[in-house]
Amino acid sequence: MGRSIVLAGMLLIAAMAISGGPRVAVADETGPASLLSMAQAAEARGDNRMAIALYQRAQEAFPWESAPLTGWGLLAARLGAAEQAATLLTAALDIDPDDIDAAAGLADVMMDLQRPDEALALYAAVLSLDPAHAAARDGQRIALTLRDGVPATDATPAALSGPSLANAVTTETPTAPVADPAAPVLLDTSLPTTAPAGSLWR
Image (cartoon, rainbow, N blue to C red; front, side, top):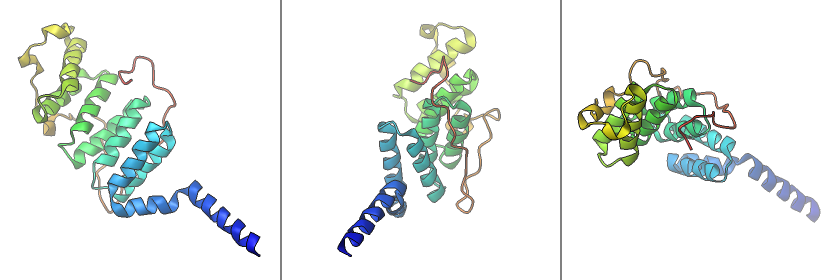
């Protein structure tokens, strides 16, 4: 009898460890930060499938928050799924137009997609929020070189100026689903295992 109880307890613990159910449920109750922390930890240990599942879970539980979509989109970009990353990051900006990480990430994705005009607008918008954002400044110069053939060192301040973040995403950017707490955004999570050759993401 005692051995049966111990065995049943061990099976229950194993099932909980595999499903992650109780831990994720507790994270859902504490807000998106816990789920995002779990997703980032999964990324850090190279478990991208778990990270994607956690970002999706956070987005479904908190569809009015941009951070899950931003994290998910940045991971998609790192994995080489540029079109999906553009959709996710655009959706994040629809929720929070001042999400600087989403804007900077989307600008880099536009570069991967060979769309330097849109990238320039997004880099300029990031710099309007954070003038010291070195990656956005470097991105602008690279985008100008790609678009005009102008050497990066010759880019002028006038050429680097652009619209605000609210106007940065043009109509050519992939259409993003509208975030609605009553109808969460559900997007395909299938991603390639390696980034394509020539990707700007490292």
